Image (cartoon, rainbow, N blue to C red; front, side, top):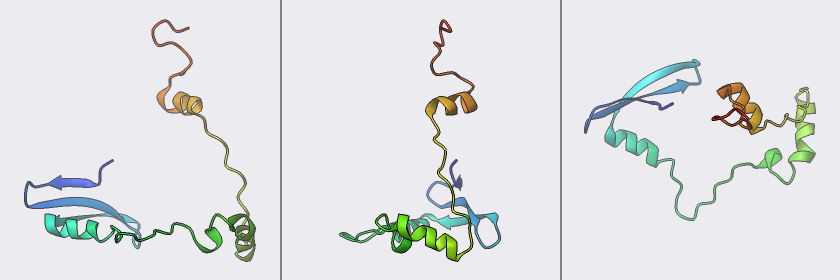
Length: 106
């Protein structure tokens, strides 16, 4: 859902966020200019290259180094995640079989 809790036309807006220090949701009210300032600071400079994964999470070395990281941290290496298909999701969440006709039931 939307994090925007309340908007006063032209004046302020209130939003909620999860405070990771206290693990609770907090509500904050800011002016439009302050909110825009906070959002704009996350826009990278022109020609700036964003790096998503680096180090042992880099795609080239992930398979080689990640098991060593788990071993060093004495963690169990996670197995492969099971595949989740659209049919399974539709039956579980929508209670609808996508292969059945909604009109005649065939």
